[in-house]
Amino acid sequence: MPVFGLEEEVFITEPERPTLRSFYYLSRLLARNPTFYYTHSAHNFARGSDVKQGVMSGVEISTTMCEDVEALVDDLTKRRADLASVTSGLIVPVGHLLQYEAPTNTCAIHVHISGVEDKRRLYGNLIHFLPVLPLFTMNSPMASSEYFGQSYRMARSWAIGPIKSDWQVRFQDIIHSKRLGTIELRIFDPCWDLNRVRWLLRAIKAITELDTTLDPAIDHYNSLRAKMCRTWLVVEADDLGVELN
Image 1 (tube, rainbow, N blue to C red):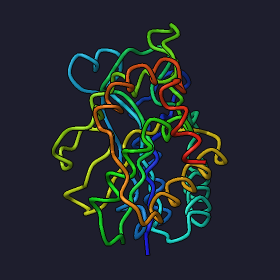
Image 2: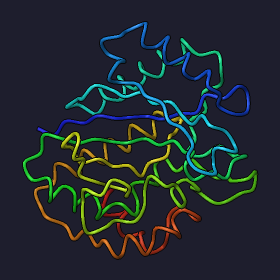
Image 3: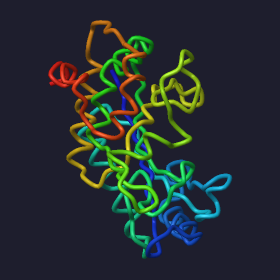
Image 4: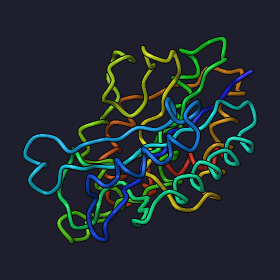
């Protein structure tokens, strides 16, 4: 039986940029439920020259693992409510803050899948649909206060990238996590709309239930990736949208 989990990263701004006060909010969250949030919350920092625009990046909350994706969204709803209840800053669920141009200062949604018999097949089947799956939550339209397209984060983030031959290389769009033993989809932007997240998870669940082996077409996905980041659905992926539906 497939089991699903979700990590969500969001910026907490004061009011325009994140500050180290985000640590205080995480400490309040931890104090509220130490047993759970010791392993289900985290923080991130900008790196290298991006630090000049601001040290603090997003904070992370994660769900329990669920067999039912509807229950998973309910759990995410609770995690969002818990974070909001300890925060006086503004919670901003975007892939990249609009006024920054900082590839190491980004936020994401990561979806984890375990409990499947053939991880290699699932990995390939998910890549098969990767030209359409990110479209559910693309949410990173600007850099340096100028319009970029659908997802600056997906195009430029240091933490993701085109699919490589080794499925355990961490910084690509989908991996086999050596630490957790899960298939981890790292490509998605954070999205305020829980309904979009719900439909994304329903689509992923449907893919896990396929008993056929699809062509991952990795080179095809990698060739479309940059265009997707700018324009959302590309003509070359129309047939995949129909197939997924």
